Amino acid sequence: MAAPFRLSVITQARTLLTDEVTSVTAPGSEGYLGIWANHAPLVTMLVPGRLTIKDLQGNEKVYSISGGFLEVSRNVVTLLADSVEAPTDIDKERAKAAAKRARERLAKRGPGIVDIDMTRAEAALQRALNRLKHAR
Amino acid sequence: MPSLADINRRIKSVKNTQQITKAMEMVSAAKLRRAQERLEAARPYGHKLTEMLENLAAVAADTNHPLFEKRPVQKRALVVIAGDKGLAGSYNANVIRRAEGFLKSGNDVETHLITVGKRTRDYFTRRSAPILKSYAELGDQVDILKAQTISREIMGYYLSGEVDEIMVLGTRFISAMTRSITLETFLPIEPPVGKAEVTNYIFEPDAASIFANLVPRYVANSLLMSLLESSASEHGARMVAMGAASTNARDMIGRLTLIRNRARQAAITKEISEIVGGAEALS
Image (tube, rainbow over all chains, first blue to last red; front, side, top):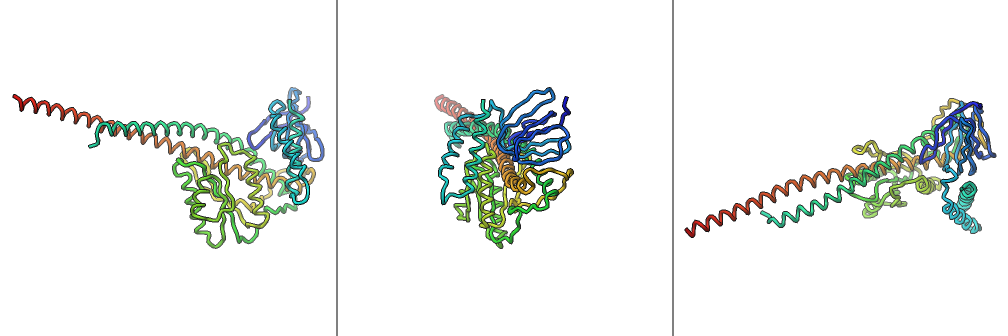
């Protein structure tokens, strides 16, 4: 059996879990990354995507994550997530509405519109689409 | 001496008030519990975020971020956090008094207000104090999205150079009975003292980008914490104030009942003596 390590998944609203696990797969800014025990120290940004956690019994749990940071140090992995949701917890209607809003805003792209709003709308769209992809 | 009917009316009215204060006390107790839970649940994130920032500061050489930049302070913004509603004892009044004191003492620097909550907004609007922006009706469920929106706007004032310093005046929750007013510098951020245990981190994509993303979240989080602390304090203050009001109402009802009984007794005594007097006069 694979060696265990400690994982904490924390959001601003709650601590989702603090537990011994065997592997984590998370959407890093440079692509998905898998973490097993004794991983080198690492800090990475996360993008919207799928978070997979394998526990000691080898059961996999899948979550939808909307971004954040991940830190690995001395076999302790801390994931600071903007939001994490189990597929069954996702509010599909809300995600759909958010995607629609973001698309409408992006459609208005043009002179006189601040770039930062566009970046934000883009990010909002990514988050919404990611939610929809994982929703059950 | 007030008549029996008058006293009965008073008792009834005090009873009604007592019912309301009792209900408010219970509602506040429930809200306080929830606010406290949210406050506790939000702490680990803040701790870890601070830790990450410190780790990064220790490792990355160039941790310059515009939000750390100290400028000579010509204009300052003061974020005043209080409630939307009254009947919370001295909760709102304390914050407002402290803000007033700050405005008076900080005459050397032009200070503009950013108010959170209807109470502070209304108070300072009446006194035509310079208000940069007002936020109200955040509700009992202050969440990170609201905190993010507000902190983004507040950061905007700082980054655009409109103000050179931003301070936050809020209430720290200690217990339902006790709280303390806090005045903290919000921006620029005090540069984190690097103290990393592990120094050979791999950074993806790179330390500077992570830093640039981490810092705004750090700012939003510290605002969120202030809002949560203040919200818990408000509910605590209201619960205690309403508890005291209910007790006072109970005492008052007790006193009024005594007076009523005495009045009734006096009336009976008077009637008896009148009858007796009348009977004597006849015999």
